[in-house]
Length: 119
Image (cartoon, rainbow, N blue to C red; front, side, top):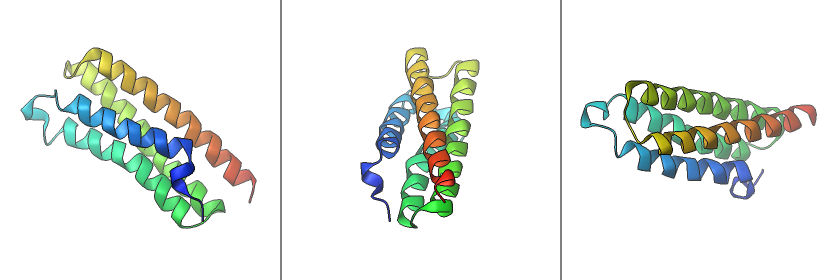
């Protein structure tokens, strides 16, 4: 079992969730059950899947959960781009969030590749 709390990508994922919650608080109420909800769920899924995979052990199982987390990161990035497209949210916060999720994605793929190659 890996201690997910020591993983930099898990820590970055937690910070990303906090950033997304801050960002989406400025979204209009009409987006509460739309983009706000979708974006928050995608963000929460990132560190949650890292933790679940680490809790199941290492190797292929962990690598699979890292891929799921990477998929959630891609989903969150798309939703951030959509927020920009429709003009909701603070543009600077969206830019920061996109940078953050791109960095998380790179970390996830690097860690997944390492675990895939070590089995």
